[in-house]
Each structure stands twice: as structure tokens, then as C-alpha cells.
Length: 243
Image (cartoon, rainbow, N blue to C red; front, side):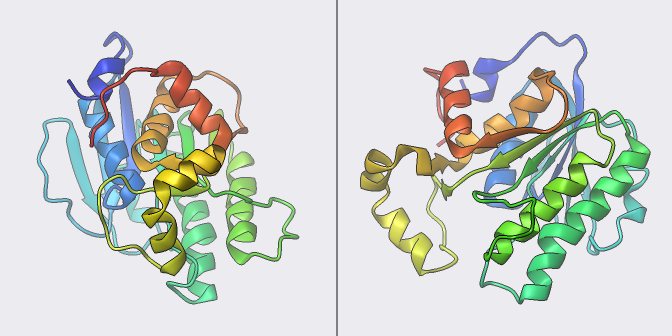
């Protein structure tokens, strides 16, 4: 039995869910959990490339230009929630591209989703240190904070902001930089010494999917890394992991 199957809820009021960035590490787990979860009726995965999987719940929409999401109007209609995991790593692109991907794409997607499904909940993959004041010296923190601020005034009834620290990939992958390679190599010790500075990718993905289906708090709920770990531990103390 998978983790998602172990936390399913009655099928009354099944959700229509859209996932952005399902080809990425966290988005990939979010997609798997959503497809396995009986509380989710349909999943619309939006990304730049085909995922190469087939499932009766799944509808794929290939969209190349996230600077203009107008073409997604129909695909985003009648959605109950969005799990937004699109992003990139600092240093992998120019500063202008980092701002576009981190902030501009998020705002543009939210604009179209808000018109097509104004009552949708929004689960956003932000980052540790996200600064809504814009005063941080770290560009990534400023850009994530800018995206958060925009989401909070976009009119969605519920917005959940997830701010993980180091995300452990669970399954082997090519790490984006030396810092990630180092932390991944010493992860067991790092997790022991700094438990609230790490989160498993599958745990984070589960929390992002679960919160839009289960939680009814008003918009603006922020989950720091410590909160994400506590949420998973309190709700799934003895689950089967995906990997």
C-alpha cells in the first residue's frame, strides 16, 4: 500500500487538482500522491514537456511560455486547488531568468487561475527565508517573497505557503551544485544534528497536496520547515513511504 492510499478520505466532494511542475522533484511526488488519492477526482498536470505516464485521472497540458498563461484558461477552469512547484535553483540561470521563473511565472499563472477558478485553493512551493519585505540580500528570498505577496492579494480563498530548507531528494539524482551534493552526502548526520533544516521531497509533496484538500484555514497560512515536518509527523506517524 502506498503512502497516499493510506491517507485517503471518503470520495464525497472529490477534488479537481492542477499541478504545475510535475516533472520536477517535488512536483513528481505530488503528482503520484494525487493520482493515488481517492479524494482527488482528476489531476491536470501543466508543464513544458510530456511526463510519459498514463493514468485515468490524469490530463496533461504542455505549455511552453509561462510568461503568458492565457492559453491555459480552459484547462484551469473548474479546478478546486493548485499545487505550484515550478521553480529553478539559484546559480543555474541568470538573475533576470531567476526572477522571471520564481516571481513572474507564478504571478501570471495565478492571474489566469484566479479568473478561471476563483475559489481554488493555492499551495505554493516557496523557500526558506522568503522575504515579503524585499529587504533580503538574497535574490531568491526576495523573489519568493514577492511571489508570496502577490498570491496573498490575488483573491484566492486559501493560500498555503511552504518554505522548506534543504529538500532531500530521496531517490538519487544529479545535484544542481556543490552545496547540494555535500549536504546530500552527509544527509543522515545533517538530519540528526539539524532536523528542522531538512525535509524529504516526498514528505513535502504529500503535505502540499494534503493541505489543499483537508485544511480549511483562511488564506496566508505559512509552513516553515519545522511546521512541514510537524504536519507530516502528526498526520502520518507510521505511513509507507513511496521510496
